[in-house]
Amino acid sequence: MGEDWAISLKNVSKCFKRYPRPVDRLKETFLPGKSTVDTFWALKNINLEIPKGQTVGVVGQNGSGKSTLLQIIAGTLTPTLGELQVNGRVGALLELGSGFNPEFTGRQNVFFYGRLLGLSQQEIEQRFDDIAGFAEIGDFIEQPVKTYSSGMFVRLAFSVVAQVNADILIIDEALSVGDMYFQKKCIEKMKSLKKQTSILYVSHSITSVRNFCDRAIWIKEGEVEKDGECSFVCEAYEDSFIQRQAQNDAINKQNETNKITKNIDNQEQEVVIREVTTNKSTYLSGEDITITLNLDFIKPIQYYGVGILIRNEAGDLVTLFNTVRDDVVIEKPHEVIKLCIPNNNFTRGTYFIFASIVDDHILYPYDKLDFSANFFVDVKKNNIGIPVAEGYFRADHNWIF
Ligand SMILES: Nc1ncnc2c1ncn2[C@@H]1O[C@H](COP(=O)(O)OP(=O)(O)OP(=O)(O)O)[C@@H](O)[C@H]1O
Image (cartoon, rainbow, N blue to C red; front, side, top):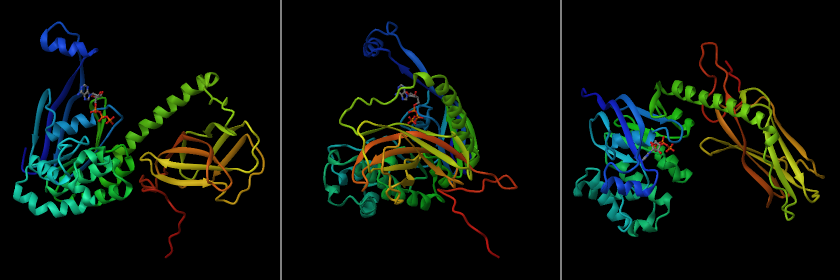
């Protein structure tokens, strides 16, 4: 590995043992050969070379092997086979809690964790105020971390990791437990570290990988499915959702007659959202989207409002529609209500629909249905094959010369 390389993996594989019953684990220790052990290869023949200063997003479905890969690079897991070389100091924010002692105060943990990450006592003393200042947890810095909320915990852990001047920064989803304000602050901090640090960033938010990383690696069932330029890999990964969505749609159609509808026996409830559907599962930006709510009225209510929230895959609220906000007055029960979004200007991604029926002042919900349906939006490509939009949304616009 030359000077310019930060990380190199050659044919790295990781095998875990799985014990069908807890007693099998004991048997293996005390009666080797008598237990039933399954072996499971979480990573298979991974070959990667990451140059210094590159920001790499790691994407993949749950259980595909992302965390295992990062833990091997961070040194908290050893590979079963293969060779790993890491060139420089690693700062890793992996599982919440690793590297922290719950009985110690925040201050003590900064020193404890800082030493684990390779800083000297003096270096930590010099950086302590910056670490505590960045975390913004006030007097809690003097309290045992077992009293912290998970958000406060991640604030402190990230602050330490960000101040160790690591050559390689490894960030697993952990950040997602921080509030929006702190997540943004972390991203800004990581952006400022980008030039001098190699960053490995695992996230289920394709938008943030796309916006933040230079390169992406898609891990599928323990293997590298795609590795390359960020938007190219993200697009291929998203396309795999479309295929899965189409397969699910086909299965759902077959099972249509067995469809489980919501229990409407609850006599206390006035109205139930039975089902939410979209007229297509995949749209091109610019196409019309129609969302249909099927409602069951148990008691006749007269004035009510209908709300539809649309969230992206990171859970961010992208937009909302509400009849009350729109001054649309509904005066009688309607079993079918449709929302039409003409000429949609969503950008590429998967969107989730949250529906609610509310009172006519939006003070309380009669019923709500989270993740009631989802749809995928693809964007058009321009004349030279580049997608016409990126980011969160695309406003109507004109260029004037
Ligand atoms: N200590 C372990 N013992 C046995 N199996 C394990 C262990 N750790 C992970 N696995 C298995 O290895 C596979 C990969 O897990 P890993 O946590 O790396 O996936 P992931 O892509 O990070 O998933 P997620 O997106 O849900 O965090 C999973 O099937 C998991 O059950």
